Structures are given as C-alpha cells and as structure tokens.
Image (cartoon, rainbow, N blue to C red; front, side):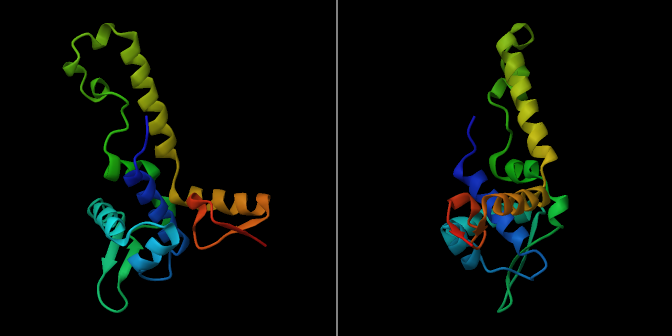
Length: 158
C-alpha cells in the first residue's frame, strides 16, 4: 500500500499550516516554497481540504489559508480520507460483495486487518502529535527544521 503524492503533500501542507497556527492566513506561495510543492497543485489540495472542513480560506491582501480547527482536533485519517479515499489495500475490503468468496478467503481477512491497522494509526494521530514529534526530533537530533521542511530533509544545524 502506498500513499500518493496527493496524500503526502496534503499532510505536509497541513503540518506547515499547523506550525503557523494562530498567525492568521498563510499564503499558498509561502507554503509551496517551504514544502517545494507547485503552487497550482497545492491550491488543488487545499481546496479538497477546505471542502472536507479542515482549512479555511480568506481572499484579499491578508488572504491565504488557515486551519479550520486547532491542530489537536485534526486527525491524519481525515487528511488521507479527503485526498486518497479509503485506505483499503484491495477493493474487496470495502465491498465484500464484489468478491463472492470473501467470507471463505483468509487472504481477504489479512487485507481487512491491514486496513484496520492503518486506520488505527491514522485515526489516533493528530497534527498536534506531529508538531510534538517534530519538536522532539529536532531537540534529540540537535537540528532545527527550517520553515517546516521536515519531510523534504532540508535541515540546518544549530
């Protein structure tokens, strides 16, 4: 199972917005620059996240995007669901009727377990958790992440 660039970039953008939570609207171009994501692609992702109720947008000179809720109230499962859809490794997990032998297939049972495990991790992890993990990593490693570039490996030392 693989999360596409859509899911990864959306998560990176949401972490970036979380790092700037409370600062007011953040410009798309600033997030795009920090995360090395095309502005056009990022706008598309932010619209998906807005429709899902995770971000708000503001227009004008003070425009940009902000988290719609505090980082502690946004789960990774929401971000992935909004951008990727189901985390099922096979279609038969979400639609057992599409596979008549699902009730007799031990492999199907494993795919159900895989989805449950992935869902459990994503559901139990919030943006606040990511922020705290990032601070801990920075402290432990003796590095400071420059402008939320954690997922791009752009570190600078103290």
